[in-house]
Image (cartoon, rainbow, N blue to C red; front, top):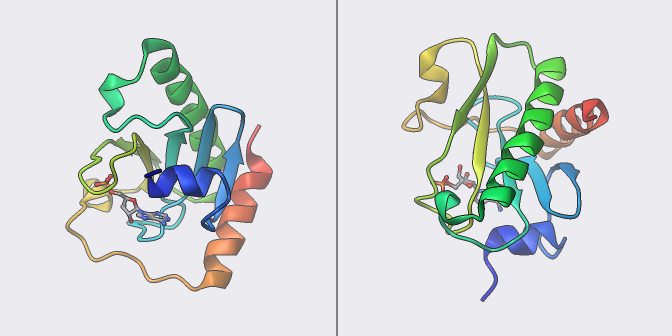
Length: 131
Ligand code: AMP
């Protein structure tokens, strides 16, 4: 069974896409801690991020850097926080969360409720800044 994130990367399940190349895919987290909260995944299906082959892990990090720079250009924040949990979805992913204070990356916090229009607008703006 493919993971939900594999199905998202293949376009079988909709997502608010930010960017992709042949190896990586970035999209908005559907339960965001902050506006612009993004997930970055490798297309290869590996559960635990530190089980990725070193070259893919390095590529994922570099791809996440480019996504973070795009988020910074759109979402006012002090910096982009990085988290790796993977307790819910067994497909390696990096959370990128715009931060103004430490509590902005507290995963116990109630998640933001955004409309589809808001998600689309945020995704389109960040996607336009991806270089
Ligand atoms: P974790 O595996 O603990 O890092 O959590 C998985 C994250 O994926 C959570 O923040 C979820 O909100 C997010 N998530 C789960 N399903 C989707 C989906 N279909 N689209 C976007 N984000 C998702």
